Image (tube, rainbow, N blue to C red; front, side, top):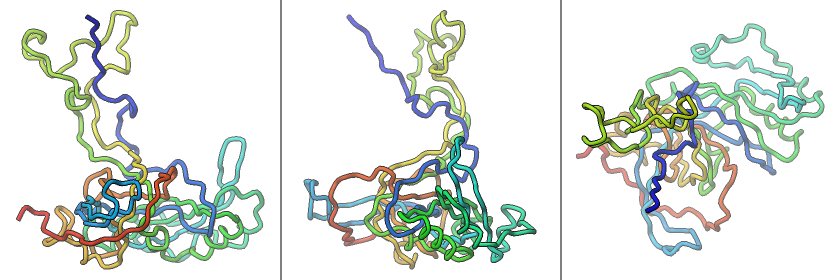
Length: 332
């Protein structure tokens, strides 16, 4: 009889080591052709609830009927623009051509980085550059405007400005320098986005929990060693291969989840805050986004969003929400 056994655990994300920073890094941006706009935003995970909406997927068997959709609530206070970075193409990839900052920096920003004493504010010098490849905004969050996140230190990150005309893109970036940007200016209800976040950390775990290998019974295990692999590999090669499931770090990895649909964008957080507030978070007090499905990371974790880089081709009519659950999440 032919014997086969699929391996336990996926090797897709190896090596499974801790993320370098709790602020996830976005390495690629979608090709956007249209009026200039920011291609991403950031928020903080508050918790989950569910909504009842009319199914608007034309190919769905429940099309036109009421369906229950689980959603994640992201609180998104306005982000401020600290500077503009202009990139140019070189033989080594994108490199910074010029950087301009604003003098209207929030005093809380000094908690994150030392504020520069000599700030280049010559915006006109950006328009003199040639062969501009990309324009990005240096933005920072304002967690001190909300109460769910205990840390009041801003998170600094870059976001690309998309558009078909590079001159219009540069004008848009200059117009936003030193000002606030709201999530409603970036996304609309019904669009698809990608969420990038660092998952919940689980510390140092063994191969059973980390890779899903089966435990050894009394016949195969020596003494009391049951929660380990049966072998570390063959005699040749004379080394332990990286494919062998072993103990190590589990969780706190950066992950990207594609094609999450924006169910609702609002400004009054009270209309979606459950009775007693979200568990371990509290009350949503600022702008918020309801995203379909789950989102990586624990409550209070910084979540970065961007326009979908590979959106689905399925036809959708439009969001029609019937009910948003505000029942208590505390088991009452």
